[in-house]
Image (tube, rainbow, N blue to C red; front, side, top):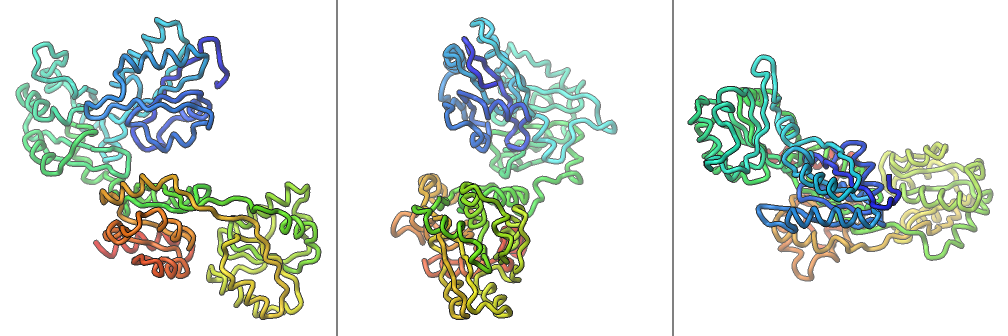
Length: 512
């Protein structure tokens, strides 16, 4: 799909309603092989992570009347990029042919003789009500459904909307882009015979963690929307099916719904935490403060790999340690058979699991996921004179090698990887903190705490973090945070990503 042609090719791709999981398989394939991405305001930024490094990414969003480019200029841009022989993905929120002006863009391509494909998307007209617990059709209520633009001025003389037919002949009506015209919409429906007690719902930011739903009737919905401060983007649903939301709502009842949580973990490892928090209803702001990288000098690790037969034990303290060790092992042309005579110890179930993926079962997995617990476990084993290999981060705590050495072991502490500071997200983080748009910050290691602090302007830590909840994966991380002046509200009892998420849920449950 990504091969360049004489005139290139354009894919008009529906990005879905906001939840990045709702994009189609073909839509994702287009994104992953594009030369150029031209995307809208409502397309989820998470989808852009799948864009190839070589691709050009161009934002042409339109928000509240503020247009980055006019539609005519967008049309021209799409055609020009295709004429350069590029594969162009026009990424549009929702579905390109449901009030998305995809038809107009396709007409431009037809006139220019540029090949194109349409990749339908999940429209917010369907998805937002579904996430609000509103089935648009139900045989006990209605079998008719209409999608209507709410952007057209209902009071204009040349309106193309047959308001009488809508009011009297359609069971469920879904208006898109109609928040500003809500009073005219309700007025027209009432004027044309729709009962004033007809249920109505507005779903704002449907399918995202920011989703908010307000319900009422044609007679009172305008007042309720004003009181709730509902603004665009929102979908309006009119019809008896709205009443089913009372028992069918599911999405907004999740325990962390609407909470905006900063994830400071390294980008390579953040996915599990982001996935778990998102599934609980949170909106995650990924702000990696660290990244893992190979050591500056591989010589000590290479020497240890060449001489694994000299060791009795190998101790892994993190998933990163496992990954970097085995990556280098394989790069040196070896495999796990060279570790056949070694016993292994792992800190934490995630480390144990990753080691098992390489076919090696851990002999020691302490109940507590910290270095002190490994030391305690080794007290039941005679390690005097035994040689122990410890491949781990350059910045790791010294307690493990120190205590094992005191027990008579000969410990080779080898740098398998380093953690570097990352500042890419500093501006976005500080802006979000200043606007009080952050509810909670997660710390998963002492290094994430230290590097997070460096992202904050000097002297503003207290003010920026005053209303922000701090959640730590364990006591060591919490101690570091406290030493650096942070107030720690949550410390996980189980020092895992799952344990951290459970502690966050319990914290908010206790405040309700």
